[in-house]
Image (cartoon, rainbow, N blue to C red; front, side, top):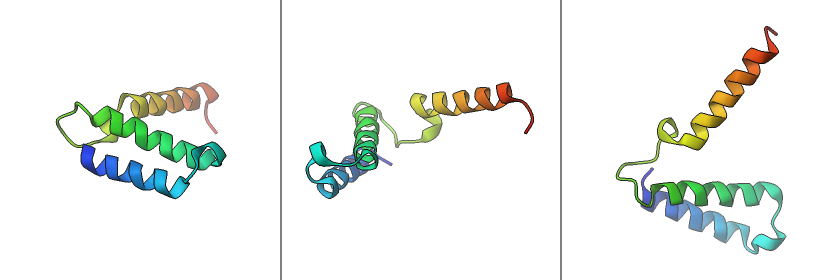
Length: 73
């Protein structure tokens, strides 16, 4: 996704949410994530990719480490 596409998705999420002060947790999380991705792409030259998103990669690494620490299922 490009910055313009994420900005449009953020706008749509905000419109769907309406008043964010009264929104549920899932709606707030959705709007917050679109805002984070849009902000990430403000000065980024290429399209969004989870492979280059440090936050997503950190989450994946944490899950892998947690699974390894838990041992075999």
